[in-house]
Structure formats: C-alpha cells, structure tokens
Length: 79
Picture 1 (cartoon, rainbow, N blue to C red):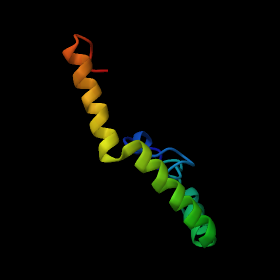
Picture 2: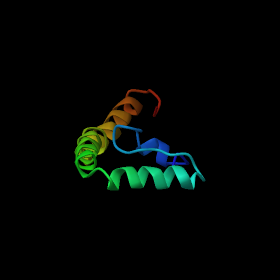
Picture 3: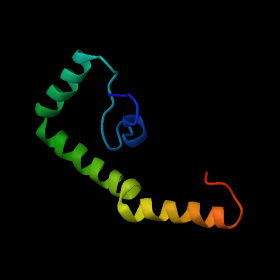
Picture 4: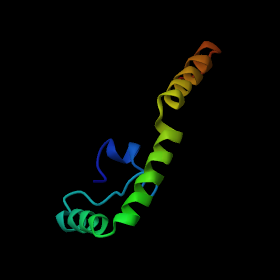
C-alpha cells in the first residue's frame, strides 16, 4: 500500500505494485491478477529482484553511506 516508508522502498512497476491505502478491492484485484497469470508473475518477480539488487543491495547502500561520510568529512552536509 502506498503509505509511510513503503513508498520509499517500492517503485510502482519497478520492484512491486503500489495500491492505494485502505483500498481492499485494489489489493484484491492486484493479488488475483498476479495469481491468475503465473508467467507475468515470474516476469514481474524477476524484474523486481533485479531492480531491488541494483538499488537496495548492501553494496549499494554501503556506498551511499560512504558518500555521505566523505561529503561530511569535506565540510559538506549529510544530504
């Protein structure tokens, strides 16, 4: 659901599917659509895995922290 921290981690159509908060029918439809199309589910799953590894793997996250520390050490901000 497109709430709180979920929208920071999930990119609709890239590594998951966001549906509106408190939208039970939307959630149900999204689940039924995936269950009803196994080939599409595998394709979406592979795409989501690839996207997530490229953007959120430990090496990627660690490098972003290193970048912040380097910037701060040079007198910059943490952003």
